[in-house]
Image (cartoon, rainbow over all chains, first blue to last red; front, side, top):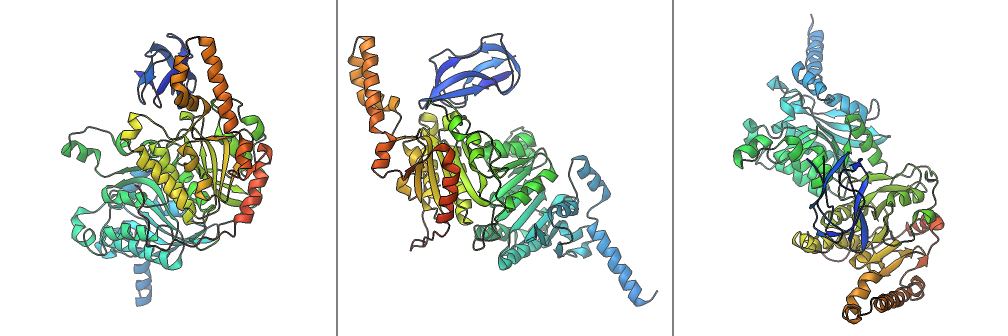
Amino acid sequence: MKEIQSSMAGTVFQILVGEGDSVSKGQTVLVLESMKMEIPVDSEQDGTVKELKVAIGDFVNEGDVLAVLA
Amino acid sequence: MNNQTENQSRFEEITQSIKKGGHDKYHEKQAAAGKLFVRKRLELLLDEGSLQEDGLFANQTAGDLPADGVVTGTGKIDGRPVCFMANDSTVKAGSWGARTVEKIIRIQETAEKLMIPLLYLVDSAGARITDQLDMFPNRRGAGRIFHNQVRLSGSIPQICLLFGPSAAGGAYIPAFCDIVIMVDGNASMYLGSPRMAEKVIGEKVSLEEMGGARMHCSVSGCGDILAANEEEAIKLAQDYLRYVPSNFKSAVPVLEKINPSSEKKLSELIPQNQNAPFNMYDAIETIVDGESFFEIKGLFAPELITGFGRMDGRPIGIIANQPKVKGGVLFVDSADKGAKFIQLCDAFDIPLLFLADVPGFMIGTKVERAGIIRHGAKLIAAMSSATVPKISVVVRKAYGAGLYAMSGPAFEPDCCLALPTAQIAVMGPEAAVNAVYSNKIQAIEDPKERIAYVQTKHQEYKEEIDLYKLASELIIDDIVEPDKLRNELIKRFDYYSTKKIAPAPKKRSVNPV
């Protein structure tokens, strides 16, 4: 299973993909807000979004799984 | 056959046999793994015909240990003399016996006397346990290699090219070098092998996962540059030497000036929105000479960029926040990365350019437990104690201790410059207004009124930290148009090149670690 993890602690600010969407390596899948900055989170691989683990406004810690790719 | 020809043929036979290295099967095994024979590596590394070897006949009487598994000597790179030691992994897997260690110690002593760079071409399984009494605990045992490395540090460049394993004690050779170039897939560093890990602590893990080149260059930070193959690693080492002097007293190499390769304008690269990400690499390309940026630790803690560049042909060290990664916020690893690079530049008189676009050091439980304050202190101590010319440029923002870490005005940069878009403050407007007026904001019931109040406060705050106000107070030394930044930096670095600061009258600092 391929996971997209949070690169740092912050709040989910935007979600740019939906479940079932295909994503490619390097594509920004969501944006966190942390330290008053927008932090893009990119997919490290190609795949299809199987599950989104977070909603806008959620606090996530570094390393938390944000989405699961199939 | 007369005596003379007999002597000659004996000499030739022995010499040739030593130069062949270990058994054919080990050569084949190496080649299959994409590894070159040690003498081929040296041929690629050094100027043609420049190699002068020492101790070729070491342990010759043993018969099966040609050169005792290590080639040492002196040669030239770009016409500049260097010393080298290079493990021969076709000889008992490049393991260290008594004479191996003695040869390494001697070449270190030679490099010290000649005050020239020392390259370590490492590919070794570690100590020969059968020889341990002769090479492990004694005064001129393996420990002396590391002792010498520490002593040599900062006086001559020490460069490690890691082609294969550097195991157990041997793993400290790269650890004490200024820079470690690792070959992807073949290089590894570890104290205990996966086999030992399984026996001693019960962990099942692969070598690549536990101590592979990619892991060390991106996670542990023990590696500085990941090379795709041996030829690339050798080219990188040669290129690295074009930025550093032969020793701490000699002049840095100056190359021909090349205009920046980027056709973009810095003014067009910087986004209007302070909080939006932008790519600092693009900004660097508009500032340094074309094709001159040489990145160090590019895969490790990428929220901070460190590397050499040239301005008007002269080497500089760049420390730049990368807003595109983690917002450019400083973390534990980025602080370490910056600290080591600053020490390297300061040791060899390479001027420092700080490009600040930093919201501050990361906060939260995770980083506090990891000792963000202690690690941040390392970065600040390294920057603060560096006496080379230092220029700090606030590109977009420098908030909180981020301003300090990026050589803010209090840390005696030779000048602190700002682009017209820059903001310098304890924190950004949003955070500051929240911190100061949180209770008042909450008390306003009408949402519209609340937003209006917050906006007024934002505006007041922005006026308070207005850049021209800071310049008027002489906090920053100049406001620079982005597209004129390169020229101004070239001029300033030229003027600062005669800077001299006497060392503080004390034995040493007690540095945070």
